[in-house]
Length: 201
Ligand SMILES: C[S@@+](CC[C@H](N)C(=O)[O-])C[C@H]1O[C@@H](n2cnc3c(N)ncnc32)[C@H](O)[C@@H]1O
Image (cartoon, rainbow, N blue to C red; front, side, top):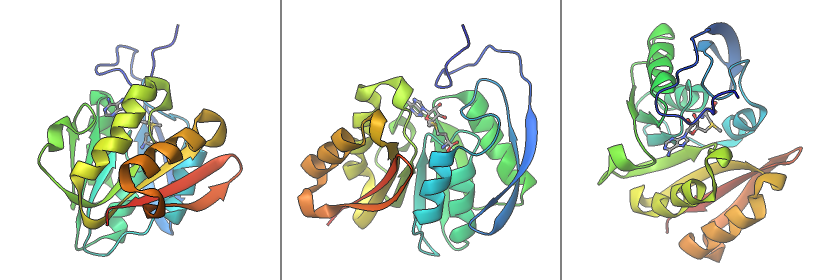
């Protein structure tokens, strides 16, 4: 059985893959590997989120479940006067995110291993971005949604991408419960994917 992408220490033999991707007009050279999410290229859902996300130029950003880094690295390019913290439970993903930042000359990021928000306890951000790990289960996904509230600055926003068939309606309901009905907006959709923004007011 192939290993799931949300393991802490992938054991699958490394088989790296390098490719170029253009995201929000930025050309990035990326390396992925076995044992990490979407090895063969940037995931369609991640692209939908990247295309819609609004990142102030000086924003402090958290990319939760960063994988090899497409979302967080693009956010770092969009916020040259800000900073992006990239976290993932998978140590191979974190190492790749760091390497991909270096390779592209992106200095305004830090990457660290973290179980959900554990490594950023007590910290708050202007923007939290996530293509959440649906396969890790509802408990993990709902913790990402609910605990975002404790990690946002006033006026800050959580942006997530989720497929309709993988629970978009229940994620939206959970966000409305936590942030309030008027604070949650569907800000994009493409094929079966939905982008939700929850604003802390
Ligand atoms: C759907 S993937 C998205 C990866 C990356 N952002 C991308 O767009 O390619 C979700 C990521 O969440 C990570 N993840 C799973 N469980 C986690 C947890 N408990 N804490 C932090 N990250 C987790 C997985 O390892 C995976 O890299």
